[in-house]
Length: 258
Image 1 (cartoon, rainbow, N blue to C red):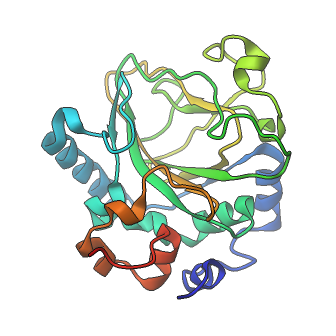
Image 2 (image 1 turned 90 degrees about the horizontal axis):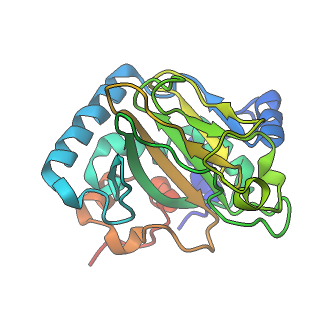
């Protein structure tokens, strides 16, 4: 079996897939916007598939990983449509994640989250809790915008540079749901992707519109860490056959389901 570096090379990841300026921005701020990663045809296909899945799964939607009041969530998406497989093979996104995790990565989970009207506010948090050793990053996330992210519809907020902090937002702020003086909103158009070092403090804001605000979360971890969703356990034979050998490596699976 190829290793992760060979898999990333096969998927088009090179040293110059990101510019030096993009790498520096990611290092300094803990996040990197990547514009126009998905075509509008891909965005529309994902919107349609999400509507189908929410209708089919009903009150069980998202149960494989997490349900959250005020949102519509879906999980185990690698198994639920080839439209989602782009998360395993998009070179610029993978290059940014590889930069954070030092080319030691696998998908932890692929979920969707739609902040419902009037809902979606989260406290600032990091996806790894306390960072004991600065620079020893274990997780990296990617937000795939399925709707425009605006100041009104619950766009994610981040605190630039907070990936280097050794305290948690609760310790630093008391009430992490309140605004942080240094926070910025991740604004963009449907089809954009924002990769962020998941040790960076972040959280959803309140959706003050009359429509859901939809996004995919492609969450990655280092290869020795457990996945948020055990991809080998959940893997379907149909999915295995749809994926290239390199994509299987990125997914962190080693053999087809029995």
